[in-house]
Amino acid sequence: MAKPKRIGHLVINVKDVDASTKFYTEVLGFEISLERPGFGTFLTCGSIHHDLALFQAPEGAAEVTDGGLGLNHMAIQVEDYAELTDYYNKLQQYFEKSELRTTDHSMTKSIYIKDPDGNGIELFCNSQDTAKDGLAEMRNPDRTNKELVFD
Image 1: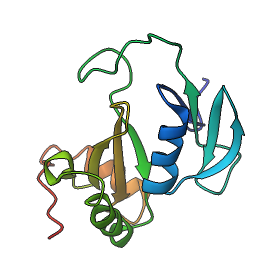
Image 2: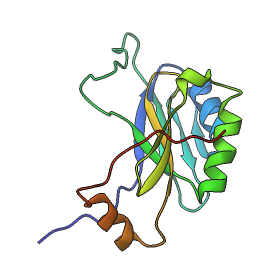
Image 3: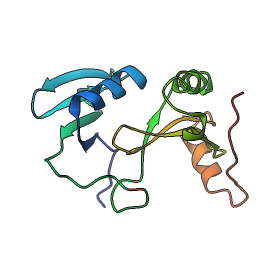
């Protein structure tokens, strides 16, 4: 039976490629792997050719709406809880505290934000040492989500 290996990369259409490139590089720390003026920017986490691409949306493209059809959010994994805490502290420079939603999912710890176009982003770290343990926790019928408090 055919089985996917992993999600390879994500491509999102944006209103302003320059503004979105600045957000994803300066705020989230992506690196530019290739810029194609008038078309888009390809971004990498540093290991492969590209993890995320930002394409220029056509004039008059529909706005992103909460709960609308399409992408709910993208999840970006960080190394560990210390790195997630660093992000939380950095993000407070760019977002109001009410715009930073945090959740302890038990198998992951997460921060939720929106990019300049309103696309949902989850920054997360795993809470278990192995993927097997994380999957077992996800399937635990007693698992509950709770607010993640950094301060």
